[in-house]
Length: 51
Image (cartoon, rainbow, N blue to C red; front, side, top):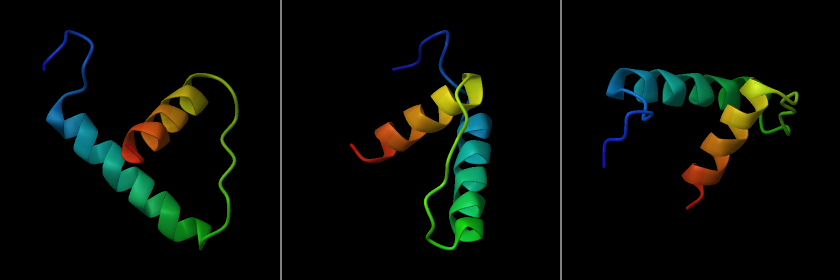
């Protein structure tokens, strides 16, 4: 389903790569994301990856 607000495949790939790098850099420690747009996006990605 392609909505007008959906991310392009390039953005999805870039976000996935960034999250993978963050996971490696965190060395298994919990990552804290500040409130705001970045936090909303990060938490949304985390929720969608667990479903």
